[in-house]
Image (cartoon, rainbow, N blue to C red; front, side):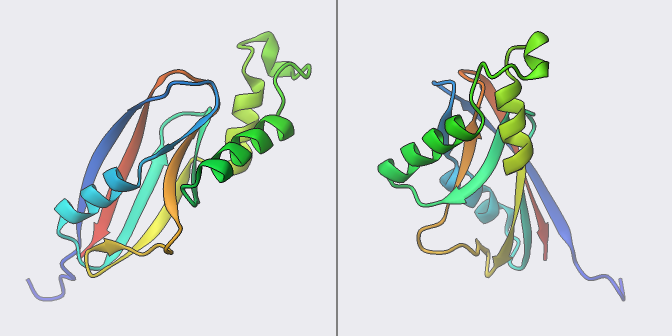
Length: 142
């Protein structure tokens, strides 16, 4: 109908099983696959973790850097520091890390692909594993 801009949305969920308490899991291929099947040429892609002890981060998939990221998180948010929430669940460090790093990222979509730099990959950053985790991916555009 006249005036419609032709927007559509595609919503999918990625299930991830983490293996360690703190780890990076590369979900770039999963996200890009969802964008591809969405057949959306121009728009945005939301990637959001549904958990308060994880984060979504973007960086290079290089083993040393990935270990550096894990070590930095553990240094900045150490377990067993007398955090008040530890009286409830003993995972305050994981909640704090998630709060400061963030549970979502938004990417531009152009010509049916996520716009990201050559060395930018999308990671789920686990702080309280091992667990089963869910990440939603919503692609909106035309």
